[in-house]
Each structure stands twice: as structure tokens, then as C-alpha cells.
Amino acid sequence: MELRKLVAGNWKMHGLASDIDEIRGIAAASRQYAGVDVALCLPAVLIERAVRAVPDFPIGAQDVHQAEFGAHTGSVSARMLHDAGASLTIVGHSERREAQRESDPEVRAKAEAALSCDLGVILCVGESEEVRAAGRAVQTVRAQLEASLPGQVDDAARLAIAYEPIWAIGTGKVPTTTEIGEMHAALRGCLRRAFGEAGARIRILYGGSVKPSNAAEIFSVGDVDGALVGGASLKAADFIPIVAAAAAPVT
Ligand code: 13P
Image 1 (cartoon, helix red, strand yellow):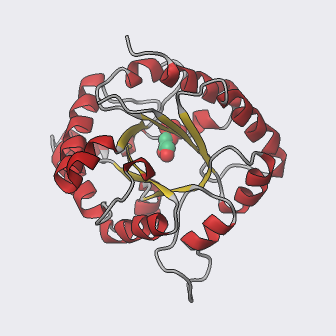
Image 2: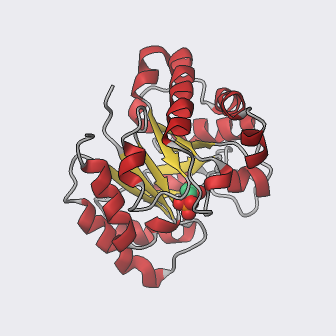
Image 3: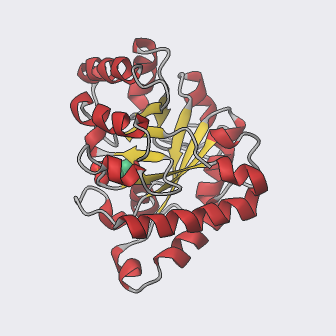
């Protein structure tokens, strides 16, 4: 099934008030590509300012706490993100799974908390280089997804999965199209088993060193329904060609 593609930028720990003009530029240029969903996931403190600057453009967060409120110093709840104007959030990024030791059940709880507050979710999974070298990439990522998926999804368009091999993030290394296709097909199988027909409508994004030069090839792979872009999302000059590649008909 051909799904409307989603190209989301993950700004990670980049972005100051002086970058709002760049966000304006990305939002304005994205409007030319009406067939593609585009979003930027920003540092929490920049969300409200960005939403004011580009009110019609989806702005997201990069993480959310699973609790509704309470004694969680430094954390931000789904309701707070929604209140700030965010419309989506990333959960389970490998940088958080590693540095903050986030577990699959925690990622699942975060996804459920976000969905219940009307936020879209981009749920990340991906294997390490050692796991890939050992030939266990597909089974590992499948298990990770099964353990991280929210129990229920009322609207398939609100959930996206991002397959991000850890070894491809920020390294310039990218899996072959065969490897991406094999992984995305396996993840599609998981989603169908978990959610039936709705599982066919949940987008599966690829992330890891996506650039203007490789985006079209990646988007031509079956079951690649968009991209989660790190470094190349910081500047419109790099990000918009990736959006354009997602808009182009697959040949
Ligand atoms: P890069 O595009 O910089 O490799 O980052 C990918 C990523 O981690 C997006 O979430």
C-alpha cells in the first residue's frame, strides 16, 4: 500500500532563537510539496516559539515523560507538549535508549502517554553494529518493536515507526536498499500482527545519514514511507531536497 510520506527532522540538541528564521524557511518551502507530510522535532524550549512563528506547520518534541505529572525533575509531560503547541513527539530514539537507558516498556509507556494526549508519535527502533555483524538485525529489531509498541492505536496516521540503525546515525554509513527493504518488510509484518489492517497504514520511516544525495534511492524501497532526518534537517538547503525526493513519484 502506498502511504503518504512523512519527512521529519530531528534537530537533537541544536537550535536557538536565532534559528527561527531557518524554521520559517523550511515551513514555507515545504508548502510546495502538498503530497508529503513534513515536521520538525525541536528541543523542548524552542517548541512554543516555533509554533508561534509557523502556526500551520507541525512542530514536535524529541522525547516525552510517560507520567501525567508529578515529581520528575527535568521532564516534560505529553500534556505540557500539547499545551506548548506540539503536535507530535519522537519516543525511543537510540540516543535516549543508550544514554538514558530507556527500556522497551518505558518507550511503550511514553508512546501511549503521547497518543492519549493527541500527539502523533514517531517510535524509533534500530540495531547496533555488533548485532548487524552477528546476523541478528531483523530478529533483534522485530523484538524491540514488539516490546515498544503501544497496546492500541485508534488512528494509524498518528503513529509512525522509524527504523534507525545505530551505526548509520551521523556516520554517513547507510544500509543497502536490500537491507532496508528486508527490515521494513519485517516491521510491516509486526505491525499487521499487532494491529491487523490498521498495521498496513502505519508509516515506517528510515533514519540514519539520509541526505539529498541518497534520499530518492531510499524512498524507492518498498515499505519506506518517509524519513527521520538528523543533521540534514538543520538547514532548508539540505532538508528541502529530501522533502522533494519524497514528493517525487517512485519510478
Ligand atoms: P542523521 O540523519 O544525522 O544520521 O541522524 C539520524 C537520526 O538520528 C534521526 O533521528
